Image (cartoon, rainbow, N blue to C red):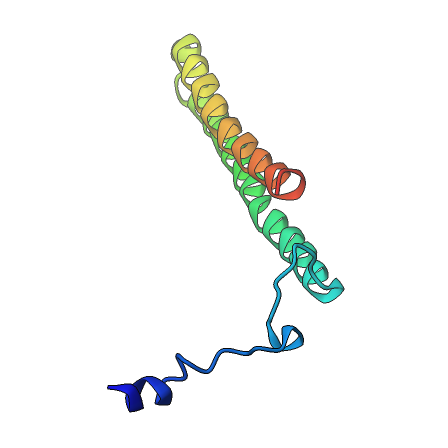
Length: 107
């Protein structure tokens, strides 16, 4: 009904141009500062994976040395497995670093 539409304020549009809210493309300084802080926090959180990669690489080569000590005849096979483990661990670290740089410089 008409009364419910007036209650919802659908017909009461502002006629004065100064009352119309205009959203521009510019943001306030506070908003830009919050966005910058969020970028730095996100990039810092993304680089935590690099520490995990370092721990993984240390574990891989530590286990390689233990394997050499237990059975020196498997040296070639253990080394190929260690290089594969190193590559996978390093790839995860590089992906984390790449995401951090994307957050900082691409957004």
